[in-house]
Length: 189
Picture 1 (spheres, helix red, strand yellow):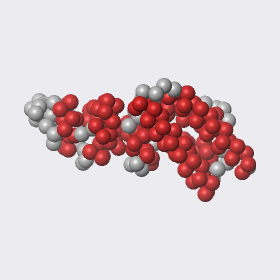
Picture 2: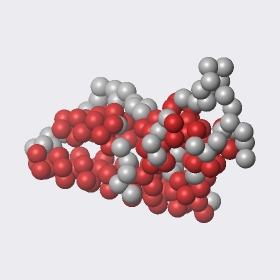
Picture 3: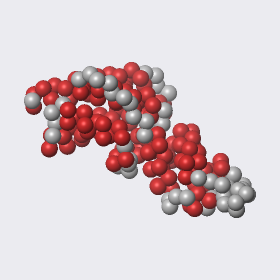
Picture 4: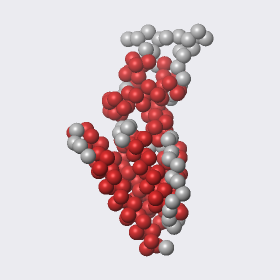
């Protein structure tokens, strides 16, 4: 086991940011099932308990990692609401979901920190701009999450088996989703 490394001030020299960065690296390499606090400690050259001085649990650390990779939000531009929505979702694919496929497990399992996602806030606002409100807004957000989680779950399985066509599958599903949600918006307004 690695010996703990002390900083000159007597602390362990770790920060939450460092823990999260290394956690994301490990998750990218082996997914949620392959992530452990033991592996994190080994990568950091610290004792297994060192991380717990900064975070309360493995689950808290996973949520912090999810927040970090989900924090990148696109500038949707000035087009119609559905073009802006498409830009935001495509940006999510390019910067987060395809680069960090483990995030799908958090989304699918309901552990994803939706309330902290700037992308989600933007998606809600764009759906409102499309004329969805009240119960309809709730329904369209369920449809949106179904599209995201369903698409990413299938693509994640494709990636795991080495099947080609991830980007093409995402693009097709994105176009179908945007066309469908736009059609629903036109029917309700």
